[in-house]
Length: 193
Image: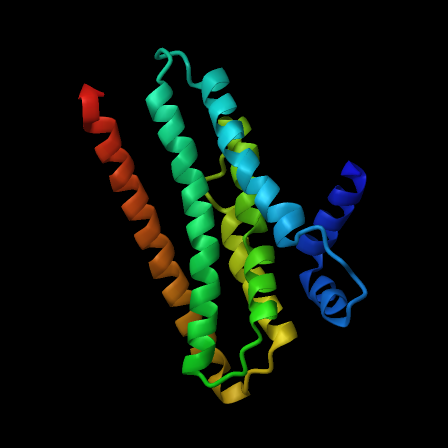
């Protein structure tokens, strides 16, 4: 089973255009679906972060409150980015008067967040592997290839569509990050920690 997941993972990340075409044609029933991958991965993220913090960050003592807040913050971040991705893609498509297929938009959002989920799992368990958040930005390329596969965007609108889409996504990601970070700082400050 792990070998199948690994092979599908490599196929998706190394050849996303071909993978999207297979999904669109119905030849591939992907493992990266909402129920098969997203929910289990997001549920495992919190325990992985807790275990990683206990193993690698306990030299300053057991800071349970901080570890739990970090785990919850990461899970909330991933879930909110997933929800906002669906909303943003749909909203920008409506602005540009592009036909909206919600099933395709949900699929694109689910698949494009997989680099962030995989990164959260690995860096949660092994914090020293953090590469500064580079891998999750690959999700934007997956959004681009997914939209190109499932939707036809007129050439005149293409540049502006992607510019608006990625700028709105970037601003929302920064706002969610800032809000969750400030909320975590408020929680840390309670009870003198």
